[in-house]
Amino acid sequence: MPAFRFPVPPSSEITPKNVFLNRRTFMAAAGGAALLPAFPAFAEGNPDAKKLTATPSTFSTTDEKTPYDAVTAYNNFYEFGTGKEDPAANASSLKTDPWTIKVDGLVNNSGEIGLEALLAMPLEERIYRLRCVEAWSMVVPWVGFSLSELIKKYDVQGSAKYVAFETLVRPEEMPGQAGNALEWPYVEGLRMDEAMNPLAMVAVGLYGEVMPNQNGAPVRIIVPWKYGFKSIKSVVRMSFVEQQPPTTWNIQAPSEYGFYSNVNPEVDHPRWSQAQERRVGTGLFAERIPTLPFNGYGEQVASLYSGMDLKANF
Amino acid sequence: MTLPQFQNRVIKTVPEWLVYVVGFAPAAWLIYSAFTGGLGFDPARALEKELGGWALKILLVGLAVTPLWHLTGINLAKYRRAIGLVGFGYVAIHLATYVGLDKQFDMGVIIEDIWKRPYITIGMAAFVFLLPLAITSNAASIKRLGAATWKKMHRLVYVIVPMGALHYVMLTKTWQLEPILYLATALLLLVLRHKMFDFRTRPQRRTAPVGATPAA
Image (cartoon, rainbow over all chains, first blue to last red; front, top):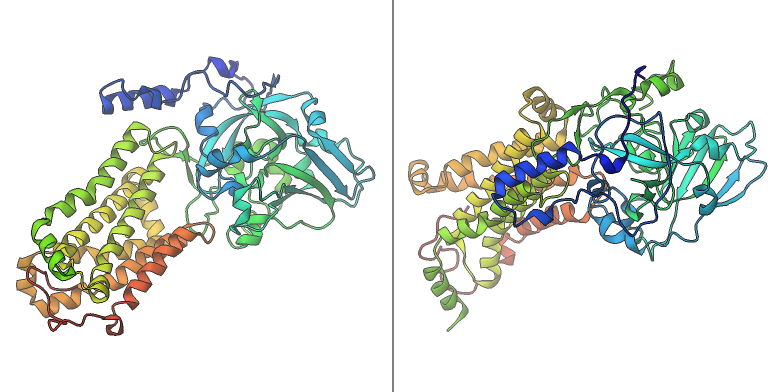
């Protein structure tokens, strides 16, 4: 990390550059103001959503944030459909209250933790890059805390080598689960040392409000140095296990999605290059951005993989 | 008025150029939307995908002309050239979007894509095969090549459309209904060309009606 960090103004004070650039392109193209309402408002967020109080984090990037409207309109969340707009269209049916995460496996004090307890943790706003395996990316101000803070509440046995996560299964509220695009429940996992890295995060909100349903409400995991599908949404179970747990996309296509799935510009997806990414919300002619190893978080996490062949363990 | 009489009257009144106007309307709307924010937050990708989808739909309509004639006696062969050329137009704009907006003219990356990624290899091959068909879609070419040769050459489209659909099937991360439907429809339309599905009973069986371009 650089020694000096620019002060980070609160989210509300930033007008993302791409928003006004988009406006300019648009004004030039349309030559009128008739279509102005089609553009995102400058006051970002959902006025009806419950607000969260969070302190800024030193882990935050100074990259320009992706506008709220894009973060909440362009999602991969197959539980609500395979299209990018499906989650925003269908996720309102999801009931997130009451919500508990079951904690079990190799732990001496297994049990359940409710959403209220998670929201009562000291919350931070962490502006992270999110790199999807499909070669698009976003910059999202998540609200939450380090996953290690949650894990430390539990007396995890020494034999636990991995932590496994599970997403809710409720087909009556998650229409995508009526189909079999993936095996349900969606499952993910991390090695214990990955999970304990302070960058790995439990997120309960974004842009200063509780997590919108389409982004994985009410609680999800964020692992910013891995492809987005590792950051499991709407978590209902956390299990400590000895063996590497099965993970959904790895089950789906083992040759395309590995257990680790660290962001790596050198290892192509079999069907596309991972060397560059498109930053969502930056417009039709936005330049491609070079993808960084570990999504730019190498300084914090590269040591977790020292001595490992990252091409074999993709 | 019988159905064939009715359709003959329709064919006389509806000009071929209308196919181009109607056919390219979605493209005009998509391009307008891409510039004005109507295609969401990843507009280059959305434009590319939508244009590809329309290319497949229109080429499938072109493939349906003969089975429709065989099954119902309705003969739209007069419009087939226009349908095919509109389909080619969509393929060309789809490709231009990939080259210009998606890959931003990075030829190294594009060549690597074609070389390394089978779905792009297949898509690009489909375009390359379609190109000579588009170029020879005119009366002068039919004359120069001879109708028989021309017809044989244009049968390439039986391979091209399934290739285009396969390109889409291979592109999605999971087995999705939409791309599979395109491929299934293409294969079904090829099967329906078989003469066992030719239910026409009229004496002019196997001869083209007035105003039809040679069958492809």
